[in-house]
Length: 390
Image 1 (cartoon, rainbow, N blue to C red):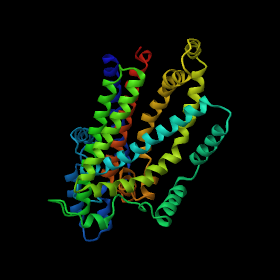
Image 2 (cartoon, rainbow, N blue to C red; image 1 turned 90 degrees about the vertical axis):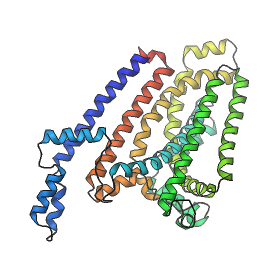
Image 3 (cartoon, rainbow, N blue to C red; image 1 turned 45 degrees about the vertical axis):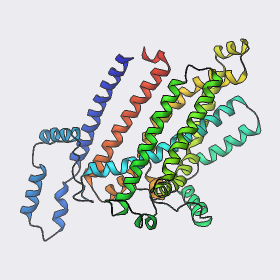
Image 4 (cartoon, one colour; image 1 turned 135 degrees about the vertical axis):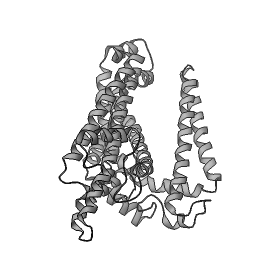
């Protein structure tokens, strides 16, 4: 297993080098340079433009610029944003990345759970009203025009019923009056609370993984009870801590703003997982070991959940991990509709404002995330199915 992981890490590093090289080629292939904007300003003399070129290293040979590009990337120096000058690109990315990752990771997990559970049921109970109804509803939502559907969700649940906020990351009125020591503006307060929410969620996930590991050798009934009770205890503790906190209402405001985009992404995308699960489940049910399990007299629930569904989950789970970076990088439409200040809307604004360093930094993050997701998918698949290692 260790040899396999080292081999895949080496391949990922080579691919990352090729990806960064292509980004540099695209950057240098653009006509002109960043000082071209100075030509349209009559108040800036030509010598100022030339000094700016020298300060940015644009008059150096291409190979020197390429070496500087790779060195800056390895050290985390992605330059300074033009549109938010003099803010470094890395600071902007560190602020926006968690918002996008949390939003789409939450939506992807909910979408996976709903799609896998529904697809498993469709494959097990074929030919009934539930199968036809779920398939029609899922495919209809999967093919719906996402911007229109998002606007309808905002109109119905935000404008008409007023159950949820219309969009954005937080409510400016609530956050303007909030008092957090050492912080004055709403953006800093939002980042402060959001970071602590991420820390709480990370601790909860680690505790849940430890619970899963420690209960794997128990009997099926005891394991299910222990995991259900432990999960409830972890969630209740996390919610209780935030409810008793002085900034708990601020965390709830962020959660409320997440509900509409998460529900929208889940409804639009769960049909893909559902249909893939149904197909892989049907193929698994034809395998010989399923017939052997039934011949042994095992209960149908055990055959379905422990033998058929567990093996059918492998390609579905791999697809979830591999498609996650694409969902995050393709979140421009969703983030624009709901005014969610994440990576998608950052990339859109940087492109329209010709903020080259921010565009390249965003694309570098997307590429790194995609390669990391492929590595995680390969290692996870090899761990779940030992045949892949060989």
